[in-house]
Image 1 (cartoon, one colour):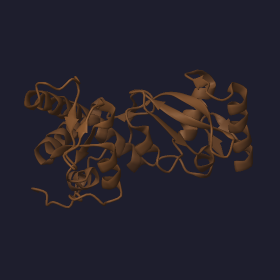
Image 2: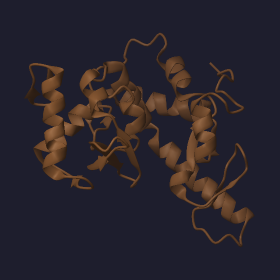
Image 3: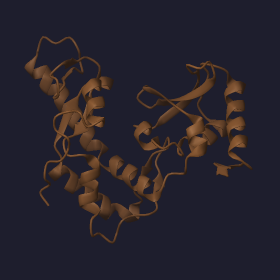
Image 4: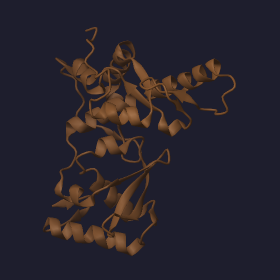
Length: 236
């Protein structure tokens, strides 16, 4: 098996190699670049939930000690949030498919829409609550609780992103198959696919309804337990 530019005769060999990296740095150490960072990026991409965990991109890897007392890894995203992952699951997993890269590129294409909506909601809250102390306070559209930290305010699609994606690509024969590496593990469309990207951004802007959710409601949404399960009909 091959992970990045490393070739292993077995999964056991890959697991031992990865453990050796953790031992080399030690608990609480950060890995920002170099060959070990590139290897861990390639390894992370094999995780079954890599796209969901990737978020806004990876700034560094951190060596941690898990609940069993063993050295493990977490990712440090560009926004400072941290999430652990099982490197054993990565070794036993598969490289991301073309469909996964397409979904990631489509998410990156509408990132500005997400950012603009979040800024608008912060300004809206400030206008409605002029005495609020926080600069980036929000109200959760699920439970109506006040959110004091921007990192805890999640922009959610009322209609699930995957349904919007499926509706847009259905019947198209120009679906990109090759993507550019943007940075920190993210994919983006090539210049030759800008027509596809522009049409997708327009479609997404017309069909999408966003909302702000707190971390609790966002977790409930991910498990389909929040009112509004993303099954509203599309205007297509």
